[in-house]
Length: 149
Image 1 (tube, one colour):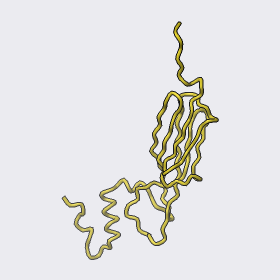
Image 2 (cartoon, rainbow, N blue to C red; image 1 turned 45 degrees about the horizontal axis):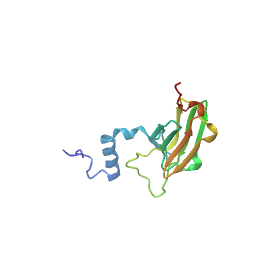
Image 3 (cartoon, rainbow, N blue to C red; image 1 turned 90 degrees about the vertical axis):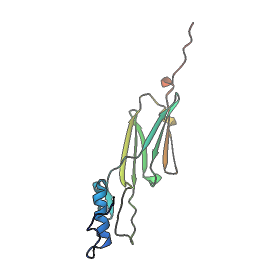
Image 4 (cartoon, rainbow, N blue to C red; image 1 turned 90 degrees about the horizontal axis):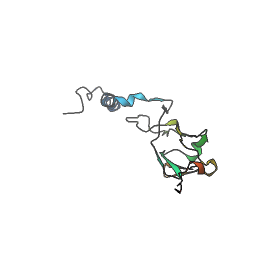
């Protein structure tokens, strides 16, 4: 089985046009995003893990390439919201794109917490492209042992 159809490469075709056609035919999902004025117009949703213990929640979000200054973490009415933006990287010497899979632009993720939390002790750390938010549960939300008499 060949991946290249007849007619893509002939004397009248330029290699970039042939590659554009090849990628459009074999990777149609790439057509969901458009490039306008040197920037990609898209929305994206970073991959996130949430785990909980008796004492706290931990939220980890993969957001490589996002500057710390472009992040916002907030908690309102027990809803944790993380907003940010990954800026499009432009290169003056490169005008042709043959494959664009990395997402750019703004994102926003919100998560409803099912238990009361201690808002004063929430901490956030951003290291190696991973945002980690530690959210301690309020004392009244923590499980407690009840003595049987």
